[in-house]
Image (cartoon, rainbow, N blue to C red):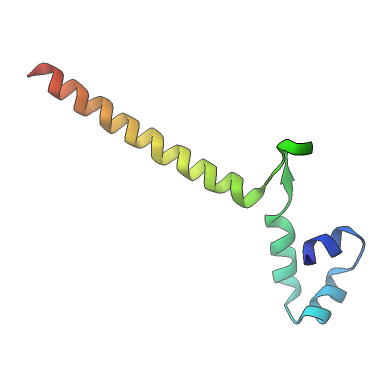
Length: 75
């Protein structure tokens, strides 16, 4: 909501005063909710970071499973 108001032209200073949050907080929210991509395929920055972490975890898990498979294949 606050980010939408910012994008519709309300200044960060006005939003900060009206909602009782610091300007730094408003800027952080704006940064977090910058769409990545275009149209229906856009995602917010926070989702992108989460997906990157999940991808890294899955890659590590995949490597562990490959090593385990190699060990069991030798037996």
